Length: 274
Image (cartoon, rainbow, N blue to C red; front, side, top):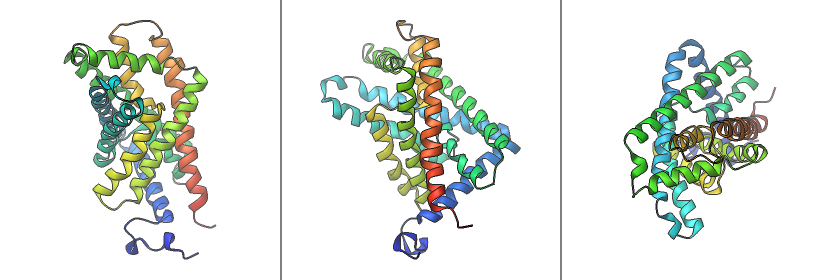
């Protein structure tokens, strides 16, 4: 049906939903193709993405120092706005982030990937993101950022990390769904954008919403929780809680929230008629 929303993109300032699906499918298939032909390139892009998310969380932590004196909603909004820098860096530079990579399910559904190709891509990106996150943890730790603000920076890290491992696994799973629903919606919107400014503006709203709401992002947690662990405050902040209570269920929730509730949903709605 010829409606305005599905009109050719040259008549609009953004792509139509059908064109956006085509762009997203090609992008996901292309990234998976690189992972299977040039895995080192993908691994390096994944390291970069993990590092950028870690840098975004450093910005978040800096802004949260002293934020307890603000109304809670305002403090959460500020944290979300500044953290969006992390995903902006990922998208504009073409880095490879696991949470958005979950949408490669649309390339599989379109017959452009095998399961083996998809899972290889996911594995390379996941490990690379972890490496990049830990590199930024090392950068922050050996730069003694935790001492900033008379220890306030480190206290924000520990408080945030402790809160993340205080959920039950089911809560972590559900919070992971909510997170990647918003993250992948942000990335989906960038596929509809025509300019760098379009893409940046598309990212800020959904990312601010996920951070402010307290949803759980697996790659962000690869930075925040290990940083909290090496500061050595103990309690619930243990390695086993990081892996089993947070990272594993959050990762599974991220896959469902982004890959299924965004990627496959819009593939079902906008896929070409057979």
